[in-house]
Amino acid sequence: MSQEAGSAAPGWAGKWWFWLPWPLLVVLDLWSKHAVFTFLADTYPDITENLRKHTVWEGWLSFDLVAWGNPGTIWGLFQGSTIPLMVLRCCAVVALFWFARNTRPAARLQQFVLSLVLAGALGNLYDNFFRADRTVRDFLRFEGTWPQPWGFPAFNVADSCITVGAITLFLLLWREDGKRTEDRKAEGPKVS
Image 1 (cartoon, rainbow, N blue to C red):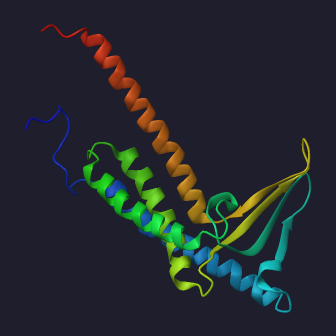
Image 2: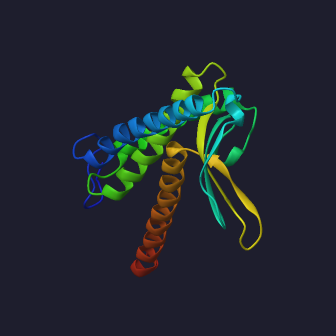
């Protein structure tokens, strides 16, 4: 079986851009969730967890720390689907390792964005498996008044990793697909 120029056999050699970021990001995610939830519990002990809110700044853009348990997924989607989402996240973790193993060592940005998505999945899975109610801890909340009143769903570091990683991965794959299409056009029609 021949391989394309510049590609290598699947494996883990030269994949530091995948292996280094995700453990650090998982630690950051879990630490930040713990720090904010502990701060809110200590500051507002008489208020039920899901009602705790601490305003960091107010104005046309407001930022609050909240202690919300999300039984759904990013942006509050699929509320009440915790178990199916746990299964999906576990499958995503397996798929991400497979994709990373099959990513070329030279494709550092692709390795990095796979690492971002993996970190997010693992951070949220931790909450699913270890919180009594299986919800994911969300604590960053933004609201605004311009151009009209709006509120962005609460999120966490893991959600940020998934969002940035998934959008960047989509753009990378889209660019790669466009390049392959251009290469085929440049080759011209095949003669039999």
